[in-house]
Length: 288
Ligand SMILES: Cc1ncc(C[n+]2csc(CCOP(=O)(O)OP(=O)(O)O)c2C)c(N)n1
Image (cartoon, rainbow, N blue to C red; front, top):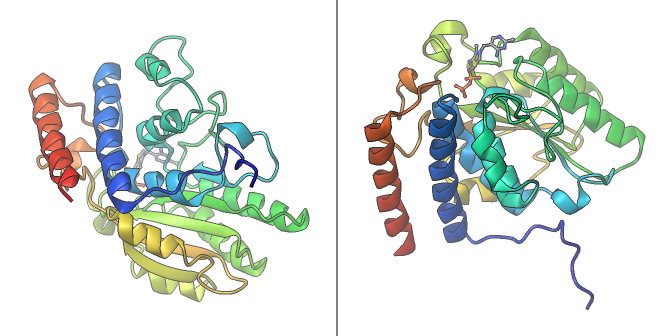
């Protein structure tokens, strides 16, 4: 048997995925502290999703990034770029030491994803554009008779943007069963609870009414994510939505569900406490 192409990711066990999430959380905090800027809470809420996507689901890596057949990932909630950068570095898209320049003068590693960085498919950060771009990319795949899939990560706070609903309608009109939207439903956005700023619930019924297949999942549980993402597409000839119920600030007790950490940067003491909590979590996972 010949050797596998390098871009075929190694499938990780649940324990390995849990350890990866722990490692990613430590790095997110490290580089946010180094930059003295960042979207801490939302990066910590979505990192388990990125972990499972890049390590166990998507067919994309540094070696096939210029291939037209690669799977596409578009991070619509672009402000949580720290989670994306840490995962891309781990996948080998660029040296992790690049992240020491995060948000520094003349660095391409700015506070939102930019295509100047290898591994980033689209510039995002102005909310409400990822799903429309993902729809266009998935439609292009159908027109070109290509088998790749398109994944996009949305925030629940960005979902009220009207462009999302136009895109949702279009995706089902064109029967884009190669499109997967994952909603990081952490229930908080920038100024308060998502439901009080602009409520989109019941989001599952709304997307189903728009012609999508929908599944709910605990978005901080790598085992559940792996199981649900193995069922794609959820319905034949329909786009898929994963409603990922997450916790903003997940993994750090004093950050969890606290709006202050939307773009809060930990001070030295808070950073040390957070790392100590993650070290404890690491030790617990090791015993599994
Ligand atoms: C078009 C647009 N309007 C406003 C903002 C400012 N903004 C940045 S983050 C954010 C809240 C986003 O909430 P959510 O999508 O739930 O992100 P998360 O809580 O997961 O970080 C807002 C309104 C923006 N980036 N783009």
